[in-house]
Amino acid sequence: GTDRADPLDPLNALRTAILCQESLRRKREDGRTWFKMGVAIHYGRVYLARFIAGPGELHSTVIGRNVNLAGRLSSAAKQPLEADENGVAVESRPSAELAVSVDAEGTLFNEGIALSRDAIGQLEEHLTLVRGEDGSLEYDDEAIDRSVRIRYAGDAKFKGVRSSLPVYEVDYVRRA
Figure (cartoon, one colour):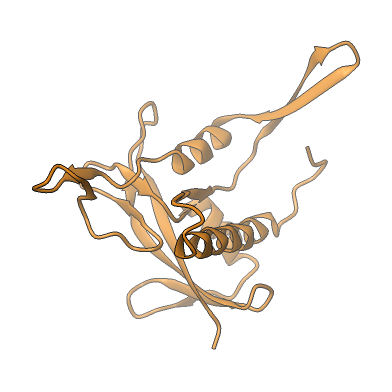
């Protein structure tokens, strides 16, 4: 619903995602929820569609390829479950607090914050990202008082999309 894009939209989206994930983590630790949420941030051109919903009522939505890609990144599979010897469901791989990974078949598992390469490209235009020894990208975000690390998670494959999409995981800690 905005009239123009702000070059800092991806950074503000990342900040919001980090604060949302922290809020959920605190609620899980306090036993107030069991909910986990995968968040995806993608950047690209979208089209604003307006339609008449009723007499005097106009609705708006965004459509296009980039909307579809963002949706696929955020609706990725959750951690696969297997049954233990007593038939109780358990996660089939170790769970990290921020879990974004891509398996050998290109299936994306997102229970953390996933970034597309396009979103990272936009962040790089406005931040000084430092390359870590492991190839990750890092920066300190004074606005939310966090150190942020972005690492390559793998190439995800989606039904109906010809090529794979590089996906990155976001990790963060409160600054010292």
